[in-house]
Length: 271
Image 1: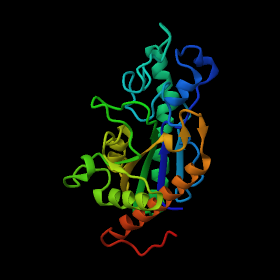
Image 2: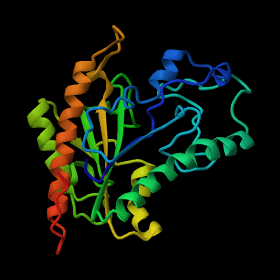
Image 3: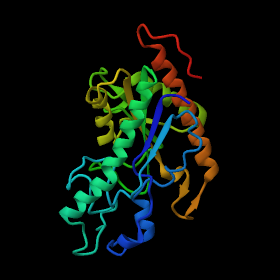
């Protein structure tokens, strides 16, 4: 175990029965609008804690700002209306959903950070973990999901300096090289996804919480089609296990490098 916190903000793929009748989407379409299988995290043995969303992103999005506009989707990724006419959430319902789901989820991350800081860890690594299907365009440029995208709030392919980043470019390159070497798939850096709300939030937590530990954070987004065939609707568990084990080993490697680069660090062994 290392002071690495894994966050899967879109891991809940279903909707409770009492709400499902209000949706205009089918069960499969609701499922496809989540990040399927990001709740299956047994291979991430390096993590001190894992945080999984307890609600589908169509009900309350854990990777958006906590307000009635940002945290609530009205369309899915394909432009289909999420709710039947007149069945969308009221302002009061949205406020209640934020209190029930969004704030406890993020408080759990804060609790994990403070716990690691109290144990004397000098650096904490947060990983926001996602996937996206490769069967639809993702932006106005009509770009489609590549094999895997690593993000740190920076420019595409890590150009420029490290100012304002959630983690220095060099560590994204280390993880990218590890994945490409071990899995044989290409990776992109900050292409399409530069990082969502959570990545920005993580960068301010050290100051907000007044903790000693330095916080580094990155976002991982892999192509869902690597583990789920959209035509046969078959899930490849072996592929998921192999991919996640490789990512796990890569996170151990970059944490080790981050920790060794702390000036005047204490002589501490974590594994």
